[in-house]
Length: 630
View 1 (tube, rainbow, N blue to C red):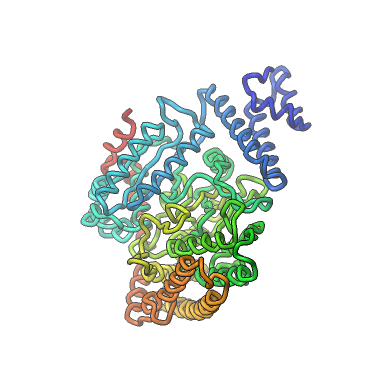
View 2: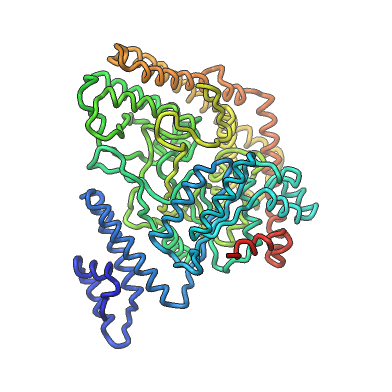
């Protein structure tokens, strides 16, 4: 059989003639060949993948060329599949909840389009990618931003990505289709008809609305629902120990093909995947370790000459799991905090003076969720899949089949952080082998850029006024999100939600958990303030105080002021945490939500069954028609 029409495969067979590939190729030339060409391609792709990642660590300069060859192999494989009329692989609906983020949404959609162009999963039919479509779930307040999101849906549809814009009018129509009993019983999960036309309902309510919307769409039966956040891209960032800075983002993972394989070969319902780049947690629980790193960085910087060539390009060793989290031990990770000095990302050559300027510019971004010293990077772990049992749902990167629509985001009305981990603990207790994680991270970028003054477009709970940033809203949601998470852990160990507990038992567990976490947060506050004092002291003694670095010193000092504003004894976030009245309100609301959850599950299951029997009842028929129109 001639491989002239498959040049990428031919190149691999000739340049890397492994005995296994040679045997597979030889089998093709036999009568009634037992090895189809597709099987040869899949094995060749796997071998190229292994070689590509091995060379990435041994010879990084060759990585881009190896990646290009890898991508060509996938495209040839898709061409081969396109010759067959029977492509039974999964259809993907990529769901992107968004609130007032047109710039970040456009970046996300552009990366998705690039992924489709590079790997061509499912091919094109009528100018559109046949097995990939998008739902933009709009939770914006601004009419300008809603119009911008609608425009992006139209723009990327023309480019080949079929995009629905699930706007407030469609959300209102959906909720209006619920019975009065359903509207009342599920209002904490999906909101009310009165609030449907408003934005900023919250990420959990928005996702739950999407579940109902998806349940009513006319889709192939093997559809998978892929939830991503608008501040993510379909790429990974690599840390290269042989160079002086983190490398660029790469479309190095064929997400759709890998996820299709997982759902085809394993009995899973939900697959949760991590993120790389910026941490998926709040700055409310990252300040102490950052201060440790910054103090160490200034201590080292003070021992070098300001105009000497920068030496802060040490190989990045890579952060361990949750290394950015001040209380990582609560989640089963190593609690010890080792200093991680700032790693300069400026191109060489430049001076330590330039490095200090660059260093100071990065600090303000911390309050919007970046981590200047502990970003995370993709690590190949012997397989692009790395499937294993999960306990956490990364709510910005998870995939499910239709069965997964039954597992709504619980306690949505409370607007707590940690909603994904809470759902994960419930799935772990009930789904077992049906809930897994895979090593298919998306790249997470909290801010619009990496330069000075970079901010997020919209970040709930974070308020900036002039040079001051107030994290108290996010801090409060983080603290009580942790309380809910560890309460649910204890409850599931007792058989919840199948096993109902008494009101007194629920309140007792909530109270014990809240008290233990409040004490831990207060301990962490003290450590943060001690490290803040050490950083301020370090800032006062160094060559940067002698002139020429006044702007940078001011930026570091302003960062310290914002840390003090948010973590001192008078900080609003800690005041809310310490308020007995506020605590009682939160505990009461959480107790009521935990009590209501089992009944809500029953109502939800009945509603999904009704939608399956009559998809038009929630007003989706027109939306299906608009999506299918050219």
